Image 1 (cartoon, rainbow, N blue to C red):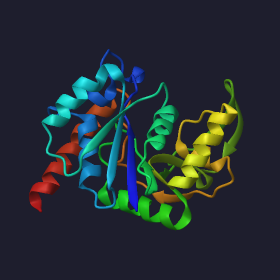
Image 2: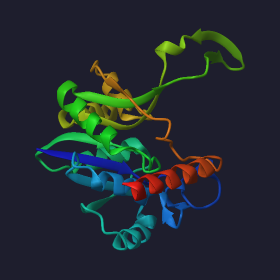
Image 3: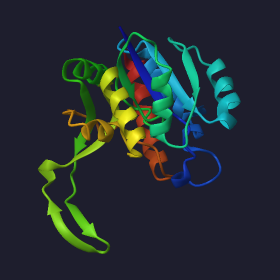
Length: 233
């Protein structure tokens, strides 16, 4: 049975500013999304990789992938107007023997191989699993500019990716959401609304999502640390 990784990379990166989508920003001469693909290609928990891209970005992506010697082939699929639509398109093209689907942000290049494996194993056993980290800040619920409640930190998790699901569960969740006209910012939300329990695995402060210019210096630091660790092995 196969494990499919879906990596949406069709965003426009408006929060980063400028005309270049964030997934194409360079870290040490290589686009961010390529670092992410390297992790999933190196994972023995993953059998297939789908990368969702915009039509206007396809040639650029093909050119960058041609320079890579990834351990697994990457199939390009047409991205939708939203992450949810991109994932839905990927699910419709998934191999028939797909058992588990893993969705990961293209701009989270510092995910660890152990995290990918743990998410896949948890999805096999429990049906649905996400990665998250506890909040270190006090969390306020607000109504416009006014605080309406303080949410206990021990009840808060900041969701990351990968998010992993049995194929049948995620497919049903996406189909229901499409039928209901419901849109969410992550796959877990779609699964939760069906009443499916979702396990939370401990994530990492290094598993950052690069979305704004202030994230880049930290990303460069983490990249240097990864290279140093690789050279010391």
